[in-house]
Length: 325
Picture 1 (cartoon, helix red, strand yellow):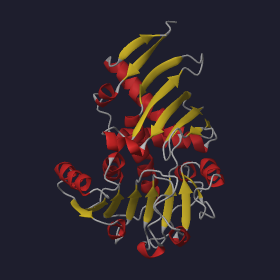
Picture 2 (cartoon, rainbow, N blue to C red):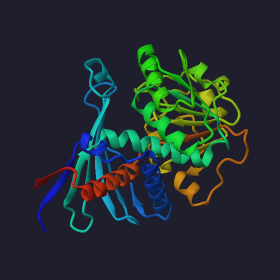
Picture 3 (cartoon, rainbow, N blue to C red):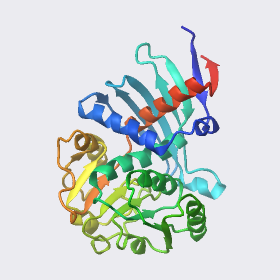
Picture 4 (cartoon, rainbow, N blue to C red):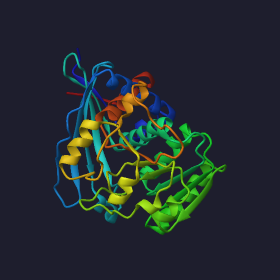
């Protein structure tokens, strides 16, 4: 066996034209394997070289799919001051039989799309039927990918309400997305509270700081809302958490681990995870009045299945650079 690996940069990954629907499909497959107990997803070791910044490892093995690998990812909100992306990283897939590395690829593209796809998986299971109004708090990378992913699974969307603390970023987001989604009523708001009003599905995507923003209160929530925080507990006050009737997560064990570290202090009970929902082992939304929070803490499952999709297509199309080990 030749000892070599396939390297794929961001431009190579983008050239493969992988759709949000394809990523959602493989992530659903990954969660079904997780439901059968066929996944090793250890807690994520994290270091903090600078305040409100982190470097984190997400290792995993999906037994049913025989996928092994790791993502090494950073989040540095201060990068925006230098014109650099907030998130950077790499994903490495290994041959489960030999342990040898198979492919190394740019990780921020994967992080952006797998995060949105996981939210879409949750929305398919937990949003009110026929949901027409989406709110997105954070018009950055995650705002963009979430709009695409949620439009894929919520075909009745008519209105999208967007908040970002930077008016210029908000304006650019609306201008760009209006070209992609002319059928949608895209509206910008100067406060998150205004964006929340009358929304049926809400995504929050703020930078994950040591001290949460905690600006959304119980009065800002409405019956039937599905809340999709991808920024830990950044936006919500204690009263907002207590107003939710049900809580689900991509990984309960990882969420409980975060609780031990002081996050999600006001989440008192968890009703199940996405793998159990997909397997039909637990009840999801039972009526249109339940306010539900689906907390995606981010696990290696999404990174591995997305990286595998990229790797297979790149090999089929002879994309990427082979490197000797």
